[in-house]
Length: 173
Image (tube, rainbow, N blue to C red; front, side, top):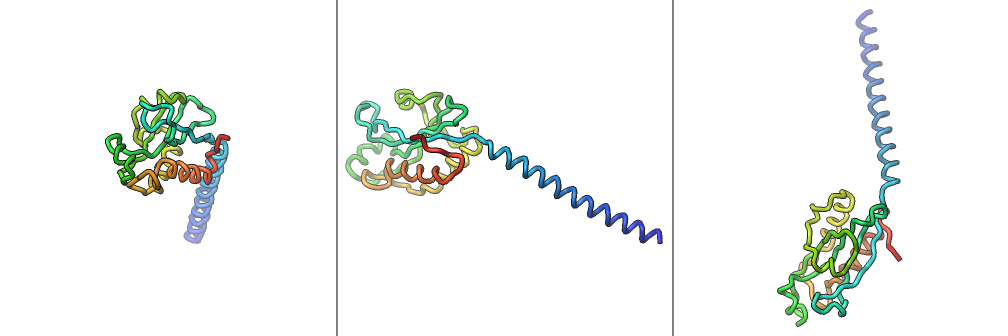
């Protein structure tokens, strides 16, 4: 008889522990969801720059500027560009290797942007932004670019369409 009561007691405690486990999981999920609803929004917009900084008045290059709506002093730019030594081949209409360039700035200034070196996606401290930019990079699987297709304008339009599908990004009008 004692054996029966200890088994019932054990089963009761086991069920209670399982219930508490799922209860705490539910509470944690509720808290995380509430924090995500209040997470920062990122604002982005398209900007135009010169292809070569020596000709600043010829603004034919497209790039995207992204900043946190709460911390407007932290700006990330992303664009698609050829290597500088391949620029002459690009102008001649040839296919050249392109790469996605990311820069971090304190505030938006075109002259500062020209002088700022590129950074890796890994150097972006914000996890959500880093993950989003990594997704953009992986989805844009074009290796070569030329003047007519797969250029900076195509990349910018692609990235804007992708960012518009995300809840945490908002386009500045």
